[in-house]
Every structure is written in C-alpha cells, then in structure tokens.
Length: 578
View (cartoon, helix red, strand yellow):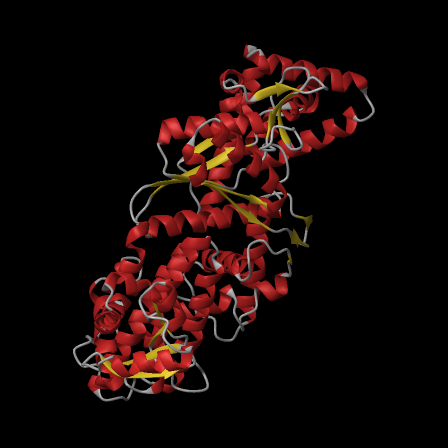
C-alpha cells in the first residue's frame, strides 16, 4: 500500500515538474525511522529529479529544492512538504497512513509489499536457480550449507515476486572420484552400511581408498579401470554408480526437508558428460575451439585473438573438463526449461569459472548468456560441532537443535511445547540463516555457536521470539474481534514508527531483487522486531478501552503477518510458541 502514498506524492510532483507520475514513482522513497526525532514519511532527492529531467537545473541545489517544495500543494494525504539540503520531505496524514496500510494487511496479507507497483516490472518469466550442489561421497562443507540457504532465499524471493522458479541441485556425481569410490567399495564396502548410513559409509570408503591410493599403485590402477568401465557404460559398474547416486539423493532429500528446502530437479555432471562431444563439435564448427601447444582444446577469451586469456575445455588425452560439462548443462537447460534467467550460487573461488562459462556461451552466439548470473559468497571459518569438523549437513542440524534445546531448558520464559525438539530445530535453523545473511554475501566470517544462538540482539532467536510473542498476544485475545475501522488510537509515536517502517517493505524487496542480497530484508525485519517490541511494552491491549485495544491488536496482527512473510522469503519457518 506504500504505492498509494507514492502515487499521491507523485501526482503533486507531476503538476510542478511537468513529467508523468510513473516516471516519478521510482524516485520517491520512504524515510528510515529515526529514534531521535519524528521523521517525515516519504522523500525525493532533487538531484535525482534533475538527472531524470524532471526539474530544470536553475540556480544552486538549495534554491531549486526550496522553490520546488514551495510549489507543491498540500492535500488530504500530503499534510506538509519540507525542503532540506537537496531533499524534499513529505509528511502524510497519519490516520490515512494507518487506514491504508492496515486495511490492506488485514484484507490481503500475502500481497502486501510483493504486489507493489514498484515491483511490477519483475513479475512474470521463468528463473532457474542452481544451488547447494554437493559432491557424492565428499564432505558437505560450510560452503555447501551457504549455497543451500542463499539459493533457497533467491528462489523464494523470485517466487514471491511472481516468477516461475525452477530449483536445480547439480550434484558432483561424475569424474575420477567415482573411479576411486567404485574401486574402494569393491574392496571394502558394505551393502548393509550403505543402506543404514549411506552418506557416512560412502565418505568413509572414499577417505580410505584415497589414503591407500597415495601409496599403492594397484589401487590407482583399479580406480582408473573402474572409471573407464563407467565411461563405457559397463553394466556392473553403472549399477553400482546408480545405487550410490540414488541412495545419496534420497538421503539428501530427507535432510533438505528438515532444512525446509526442496528441489524440482536433481541434476549432475553425469547427465551432461555424454553431451560434451556435441558442444566441442559446435565450438569447432564456429572456429572457437583451438589446439594449444600442449595439445589441449582451448577457447580464446582475450577479445583480441592473442590468446592472452583462454579457457581449457579438452585435456590433451581428449577427455572433457568440468567447464565443458557446464557449457553442455547450460545449453541443455535452456532447451528443456526455456528459462529467462539462470542463477548459479557458489562460493567466490568459482568466480573466474563462471566468467569463462558466460563468455563462451556468448561467443557461441547465445544472447541469453547476458541473463546468466553468478551469486558468489565468502568462506565460513570455524564451523564445527562437538564431534569436530563439519562433514555432513545433518551434523549441523543436530548441533543447532541440541544447543537450542539446552538454551530453552535453561530459559525461564520458555513455554510448554507440544514438540520441543521440532521447535528447537526451527529456531536453531533460523539462527544459522540470520547469522549467515546479516552481512554482504561476499564477506568471509568466523562462525561462533554462542553468538549465533543468542536471544538478545539481531539474531534469528530474537526474530522468532518476537513472532512467537505476537502470536501469544493474539491467542490471548482470540475471542475478541478486531478491525481497522477506527485507527485514531494509532497516532502515538510508537504506532506511527511501526507504520512508517512498514512503508519501506516493497523498497526493501526491490533492493533485494536487484542485488540478490538477503541482508536488506534481514535488517528490515530486525528493525521491525525492535519497533514492535517497544510498542508491545508501551501500548497494552489488556485494560485499554475497546476501540484502543482493537486498533492495537490490528497493528500487532499486521506486524506479525509481515514478519512471517519476510521470514518465509529468507527460508525461515516461523514458530508460534517458544
């Protein structure tokens, strides 16, 4: 509903500037709430008006700002217009602000923010997001966890904004590692352990065979032989590989479900290994693939033809590389899914790889390569459990749950819960996600369980506590009907601060969609939590006159709705008791 107020301001500005309202809408923003003093509600930068041709560059900026502010008419919605250092501030009628915002949140809570006209240009189309992408039989390290939760956020955000989203998990399920794994399993693998502890047993076999291969030529020879059998699609080798892959995918699905993540497709390098030959033939036909002095197949990326920068796609023995399979995968996905944009979520060490991938796709004449994007993230240091270094995703979930149960048991404010273990797990996962999303994704950070699970400060625990506390309040007054017919009790400073902050929700979603950084939404939800916590302390429902109680319940119900909506986009399942 912020769009109603932007439109009202744009209507007045348009009369003065002589440009369309639609051209002015993106330039008008909500003013961040100030703790020190009452602030205006909306603002526009005169510099932006000048750059957009919506104002003539007459005189200095201060004079031009004051002149424009003096020409803008006040009306029933815009009560005051103030010029201040190159910015025009607009104060809105607080009764109308409350009526419009709370009215929409009560009638259409799921559409609040996401259906704003600011975001209309983002609606429609198909987005493919590749994320998580662990390697079979190898460690599910902290980078895979980051990829999983960041990719899930991006997919959730795109879907909330009206995109059709395809979630792909591109497994590391091919290559020489499977020669080692197959040979190792034939030597000391156990079908019984594979059925009961598949991920742990495959990792155990992989570690052991690698150790033996370092000092035993016969093991290396057996591994090469097994991989050769795989490439030749020999029945027995393929049957074992298929078993490894299927049992691993089933186990990952079970664990992803605990995390609240799902995928539409489990893909992998194996799917595209057979397609690499056609890719190489196309590159050769287009005279892009050249043979280096070392006998490798390369593509010149220099742009000047001097091979000062190039990408290798074929080894000297004629076998393909990871990059070759990624080119094949991109072409196959475009044909199968017809995506409008494709987003890869991996750590920043792969930045150069994706630059090469997009360059090659563009050189092949695929204009859609411009709509492929790599979202890179930094490294996590020190993520471990009581058992030691993180090896499996489930280790992280178990650690988060057990630590949170311990914290809840010691807390004096914890409620009696129907399923304390599930609640603890959801809160623990929330804490992991918020810790990860607080800063720029590219930043490295040091992981600390004690900081992650703190109940105070800007943490996932505090966010869940705020939501649960509002749910408790609404349950206490469930027998009372409340509506937004009379919002006059909501003109106090605490209520107004909450309403002003809600005005920013669609802008925050737009910012998140532009740079695919979750920290904007995290900061918004944390500020909202602090504001509503203050309002809850100072604006009692119990003992207040009926009209006041109803209006406050309406406000608290609306905030709970926005908190829940934002948390779900982040990939957090809200809890209603804790």
